[in-house]
Image 1: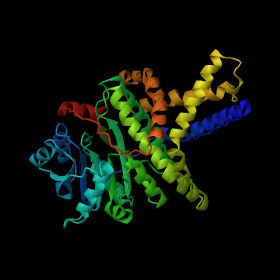
Image 2: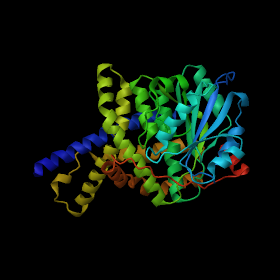
Image 3: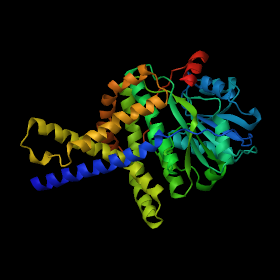
Image 4: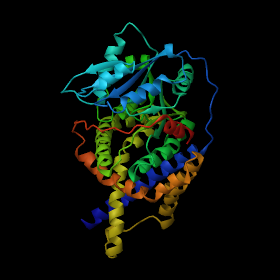
Length: 412
């Protein structure tokens, strides 16, 4: 039995090192210069879909924000999916001059089902659109969003994800931790993959899909992470998802650890669910077609397993300190392997934050970020245990920003 534990622990270390360095090497490509092309003539007609559940406190702000997009007003319309709302959301939407589509379904709950319902309504309308832009009710959007998405569509891209930023990074240690994670991963994960001609990962909001793709593969992504599920469906259909670094979508982050913990457990429930359902098809595709992008998507899907394995190794390494004779916790790789990975964990992100022009004050959030990072270990475990549960937990949004604060967000 002792030998079994030893070999399992060795295997876990190899697994962690391989995946860690795989991501470390790819992340270096995110340090390259961001290119911005000249805007093309606006031709794409957009339907903007805003998902909302009891969002009367913030829905008015995003509608006002979307009305100010630097794009011909006759080429886009704003639709708000008022999903099982029992507050004043729909009335606020109508007062603001947007289309309120009310849905009441106590069985099929969640954003994925709401989007599917909306698209069925949209495609039955007389008015037709070239693409659909998806946002959440708590978002704010940079004025150039549709211009840049139009550029991508005219170049032939069908699914485009915009830069995800934070609307309230300075509120609490939790919000700055979220923000730091997004700022670094936007370059180290998303931009790096664009440079390597790999697929971008949809982030739940701030993305655009052409209507021909939506009609081709439908919207059956109804898991708790509908964005991840739709990404995998696109990859399996050879529909490229691309990254647009030059637009920003500002998302409200939870203020407390409790609210953050609940939200991230839901994310991991959906992630594990998708991992179990899509890993094998991606492996088969990567082997049969020698498709590296499918393999890369598979690696992304099994990230929660890496987090759990890392947690196991961390606990074992800690036990080694207090119980030196505990042989099964032996670290087989030289120390410099682990120290070098720490450089990628902290050194590269600092370089990225400098390149993203993040203020020194906000970079100080890296001092508390490790506590946020370690919390992913129990969250991953809970997500695995609850992966078959489909109950949607709503994150309450109440954070609004005035026009001056929004200008500061764009400038920062």
